[in-house]
Length: 203
Image (tube, helix red, strand yellow):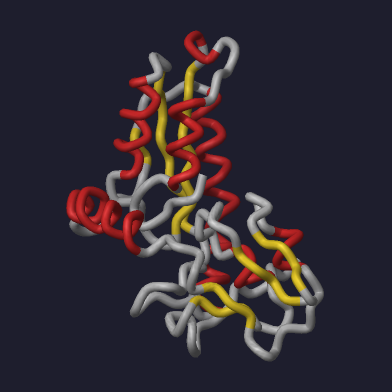
């Protein structure tokens, strides 16, 4: 899963509370969480969620990827150089995680970052309560009505009306629509002014 503001995405939390998986009680569960830099204590949050279901949490891992979160002040996409450095390190990291999971290693192999308790226990709940509304989303005059944002939304939360995207309430603020737009026409209020987009991965 991705890390959202040093915690679990709200729809993943909801899923873990209610989903019924046959045999989950007898399985060993591992977490692989992607992040731009660090995950705070999100892995502890996940362990508690899994344990409450009576399941067995084993290993937790974080994978650093290019930054894509652009809706908060001071947050922007990485430079091309930093992006490539992160991508270059990824294959070795994934291989290491794969071997660890294969061996059912009980480990927290994550990057917590600075002030992890503050980030996950204070910033995260405030972010979830006040900064995850889809209402600020809108399309600018650069929109060409291609509908790519609607097709890429993992929660089918975007519908096209008169060749313009309209956001409903079922949003996890993953920003997939923002980064997928071919004309950079999607904005989140004024928060994304002059912010970058995720660059396509070069072969």
